[in-house]
Every structure is written in structure tokens, then in C-alpha cells.
Amino acid sequence: MNSKSILNYLEMIANSNLMVNTFMHAVALAAIFALFLISNNILKRVVFQTSVSILFLSVTINALVYGNPFHVITFGILALITLVNLFMYKRDLQITNRKWNIIISCFFIFMGFWYPEFVNKNGIELLIASPLGVIPCPTMLTTLGLLTLVSPSINRIQYTITLVFGLIYGIIGVFVFNVYLDITLLVLVFYSGMNYFYGMKRMTEIKKD
Image 1 (spheres, rainbow, N blue to C red):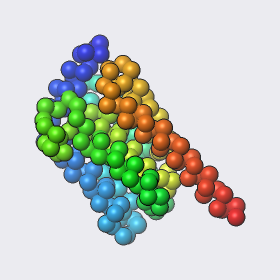
Image 2: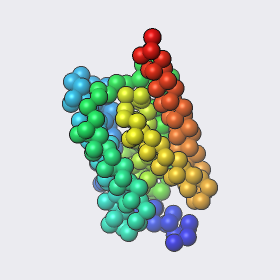
Image 3: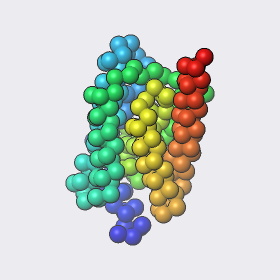
Image 4: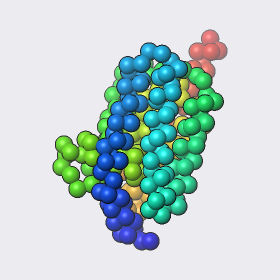
């Protein structure tokens, strides 16, 4: 398939699954509410990681149904890693205590949530109908934004692999498909990577002290 055919494919599945789009927005909101409103650490972690895994699984299933093996493999890996972390990684999730990190993370979460590409709806309708959880880039924007919001308390392997796939999809979106909105995904990958490793360095220094 050439780039035009793939763009047509993405537009087709984005507009053929509007009910799924809306449900995935509710799933993303569940992850956000878990972080800000649930005080029980175990329940918070379960709701958050389950929500993220559902977003990844939704893209995987849509790709399987519509015959895109690349998306099946990449998002299948992301879903599997998230589910493994749900059961194996017991560390409490903590929202970053840096105000600007919260603001920046929420901005990118919103960009994935709203994502004004592929769906034939107006700006307000996109808040519930954008292709979040159906096509890769808006899903990567929202999920990586969510992980960045709890960085560095998130599992390093989960975060690193999500960053790598975010970089791959960002490069493909911008330089292969000329979807320049996906520059936001590249910016998020760069910011998230720098933020995470800076946070890990600070935690190491605190432990030494």
C-alpha cells in the first residue's frame, strides 16, 4: 500500500468506528480520573494500567479486523507490556510534583483526545469523536502523555518501549504521510524522554544522599 492508500484506510476506519471512538474517550478519562481522584494506590494503579491497555488493545483489534499487521504487532506489544505491568509491577503511581510537567503532559493528552485529523466532525464534536483508540498517533499522544504524567514512577521498560514506538509513529506520520500534526508526537517523545531520565537521575541522587 502506498501512503495515499494508507491515509484513506486510516480515514475509513476512523469514520467507521465512531461509537468505539467515543468509548475510548471515556476509557482515557477513566485513567485521568484514577490519577487525580482515587486515593487507594492499588485501585489507582489497576484503573490506570487497565485503561491504557484497553486503548492499546483497541488499536490492535481494529488493525486485526481491517488487516494492518504492522499496527497489530506494535500495539499488541504495547498492550501486552501494559498488562504485564498491571500484574507484575506493584510500585505506586504518583503524579509528578512539577507543575509545568503536569501542564505539558495534560496538553499532549488533550491533543490526542481532540486530534483534528481523519474524522469528519467539527472541532467540538472531535472531543468525543476523534480517532483515539482506533488509529495509532492520537492513541500514542494520549497514552504517552498519561505515562509522562506519572513519570518517573512508571515502569522503565514500559515507558521506554512506548517512547520508541511513539518515535517510530511520529516519524512515519510526519515524514512519510505528511500529517504535520504528528510533529506534536515527536515533540512529546523528546520531552518525555528528557523528563524521564532527568527524573531518574534526581531519584538516584536523592537515594545517594
